Amino acid sequence: MLNDQELLRYSRQILLQHIDIDGQLKLKDSRVLIVGLGGLGAPVALYLAAAGVGELHLADFDTVDLTNLQRQIIHDTDSVGMTKVDSALKRLSAINPDIRLVPHRQALDEDSLAAAVTAVDLVLDCSDNFSTREAVNAACVVAARPLVSGAAIRLEGQLSVFDPREAQSPCYHCLYGHGSEAELTCSEAGVVGPLVGLVGSLQALEALKMLAGFGEPLVGRLLLIDALGSRFRELRVKRDPGCSVCGKQHA
Image (cartoon, one colour):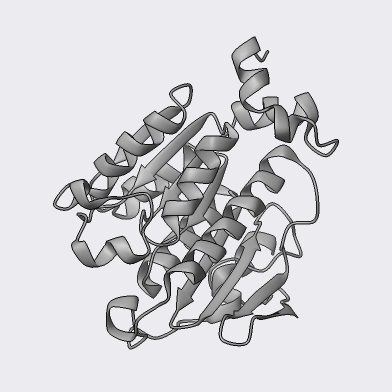
């Protein structure tokens, strides 16, 4: 049950008929893994903690750099040199001391990633490189865990939800194939801060919808964001029956 302090803290979202007490209890009982605590992971972690998601698993092996502060709003100047996980732990504990925070300070290899994904109900990929996204996607497919994936670079963003529990849902690999390690990162190509904040906020919203069971998640849809022109575009995405990652899961 929710105690009086929780009823007061979450009162504004409990007022929504789509969430109500039942939805808030689902959030309280949920466990989520956030992979990456940079520009995307920052708003994701802040909003999920504030919303009362009961257990957040935080994974990042990097440390806070001065160049991060332009967009990674969970960190501050005093955090420079700290691990991103420890910086996030400090901030999230101050926002909501009632939730449980589980740190993963080391890079996740195949075994530790599989264990981390299996331990939660939903995964948010907030990483900035293709190899990590592919590994996270594969682990989610094997463990049948929904994945909220976001990306942003320069003035363009993308967002989708992949749910291996649904037979018709594509996976990340269905959409992007083998990709390319030649893809640029924000440190090479640049990115505007509010754009990653926007994509990360939308990731958090999709996670809340999946966990509390309301609305229409972006399963089978890819949302494209053009920050330069302030335009949003949606593409339908189908599962590839021959996908080397998820195809065999529904054979």
